[in-house]
Length: 366
Image (spheres, rainbow, N blue to C red):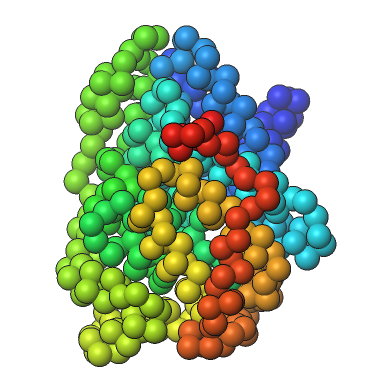
């Protein structure tokens, strides 16, 4: 018979505990690939606040329960239902999730995350801003939002535009999943550790004495590091950089058609399956993000765009086709990239009347 504490632990969506000098946050919805709910966002935020002020805690470790993945993103079904019903839940979720992303980015203690298995959407937002981002041979990272009538968020217009290449543009538009080596190559992770050594790494981190510094933590992680499997995007980067640097979706599609290679054909097919409006909105967000000075600026722009998402046809149709009916046959409106108008896209770029952050005169977020 299970004890009461064990029963509570088995049903809690987030498990928070101290393990030696390590503060642990465990996402606990394995059947849902640890997809995030509003309560989980709040649990994580509260735990980070407590660990930040606990002198016995050297670092925080965030992991996902189960064998399949770290986190598959936000609970999109709940957001879909809330949007349909006119509930305040979707806006509250995005607001608090994006504020949590910004908090992780400026967290004062080492923030370690195991990006093992599936890491998508909101799961990327919980990962990429950490100080020690660990992938494994099982990592499959993706930002697949254009396939559900949405756009890559959680600061994607920031973290996918920091490099001097177009790999981030490619990932954002196609939703293509990548493995450990490509994730490191894009600057979205730091170290590869074999999945069967993660538990030993936890033991080693927890055993560090209180007061251990960031260098000691990094050295501990590095003792478990291994070379990741070969990158798959690297051979195609010249093509990606050339084609995905184009100004418009139409030019990108035309460039892929001219290329006439198996890689270009696959990428063109991927784009053809996505919401045309989402592709246009995503590309504009990325181009503006590349010019932005802070993560907060990008999150603010993305948050403002979510208002148009909730009023759009494509979001509800995309989630229906992918998650609810699962017929994988969304009927997008407009139906093609050439039918998307400037007015369609402009609807996503009206500033929010309730911004996420307060900026001082020097542009710093408070």
